[in-house]
Amino acid sequence: MDRLTKSYFENLETKDKNLQYEAFQNIMNATKGKVDWAYEVWDQLIEWLADRDQHRRSRAAQFLAGLAISDPEKRMLRDFPAVWEVTKDPKFVTARHSLQSIWKVGLAGPEQREMVLTHMAARFRNCMHEKNHTLIRYDIIVGLKNLYDAIKDEHIKELAAQLIGSEEDAKYQKKYQGIWK
Image (tube, rainbow, N blue to C red):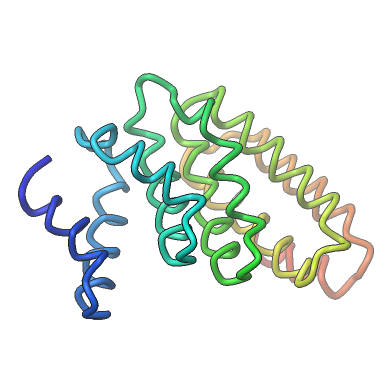
């Protein structure tokens, strides 16, 4: 890992909120492409998924989702349940940030994509008992759209249409359909 990237990870722990935010943004931008340092931080990020600090949990889930494309060993197939768990975090903002990034795991390959789609579809169908279920559903549909836009897999589009069609509330069905226009 180069010194600059290392400094970003160090700055996540600083008391200066502006430096923390800048470091977070730089790491997120770096994970938009393949990086050669994924395994240097992987285990630490896995530990952070269960940290007391909600910011660490959120960052870890978002970073790992982005790092999935830099995971030739396919560790994500093993570690995905821990990442997915953060999408159900007691702190809704942590859960939501994690859920909004989880689609990136699907960019890593067919196995990872199928795993993400299966989890997202099941969550969409079964989240009615959760607080803020309409936001959860919205984020899932946006995630499906993001994944579709990135790889143009018609299966994703069909899945989204099925899920949207299963929404019984016309107001929300229309809102979800608007994402795909």
